[in-house]
Amino acid sequence: MKEVLDFIQYKKQEFAQLPLFNFMRDQSIDPKQRLAWAPCAAYFIMNFGELNKYFLRVEPTEDPLQLIINKHTYEDDHHWLWFLEDLKRLELDQSLKFSEALRFLWSEETEKSRWLTYQLYRHTLQATPIQKLIVIEVVETTGNVMFSTAADIQQELKSITHKECLYFADFHLAVETGHTTGLPGIEEFIRNIKLTEEARIEAYELVDKVFAAFTEFTHSLLTYAEKYQVQQLSNVA
Image (cartoon, rainbow, N blue to C red; front, top):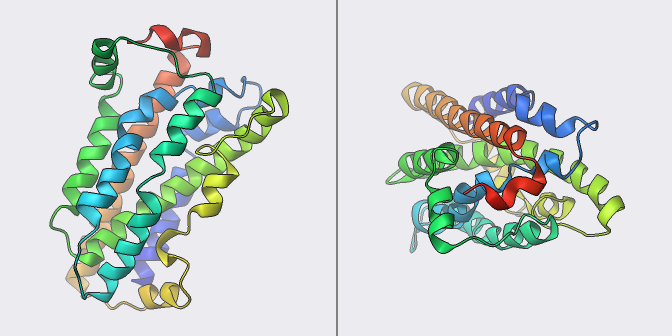
């Protein structure tokens, strides 16, 4: 697995230079505006807990790798609660009629948020523990780029609003333990997993596919953030 994990880190460097993150790092833009894409990401974020519960987790199991994955899913299946709280703190929690909320969540603007969710379901449904682990590694890696960038914005906002976020903040980064799940020796155990040549090729392809899905997702978030000023977001549905 070492080569696959190294490949993920290589892809991370490319991912970190995507236009969305350049936008988020641009301090000439109002910090709240740099997080204005949050409503567009809601479908994916709200489904992420169910990805962990119903696609990644398998219980009961005696597979040592699946046991590691299961522990990870219990760490990651409730982060959507922090997202909801941050929508309030960022003043992105405007009221909508139920029909308007549904129209927004299934609109063309949020299509890539849904598509990313479905791609992750597709790649983890009936997948082997190795394949699930690879998906988790890519998700954690892309999340690290996103949340480390968002946490910097939160520090700017905190100095203005005196409000502390949870999802878009250092708090989220601090509890993201990744595949290690906080257990000693797990990192080495995973890196030392032996793959056949065929499995290695399939792993590289899976990494590329998941990164591609996240890349398209970020493009849609940037389009949304550039289209709507924060004060307009109550009228987007």
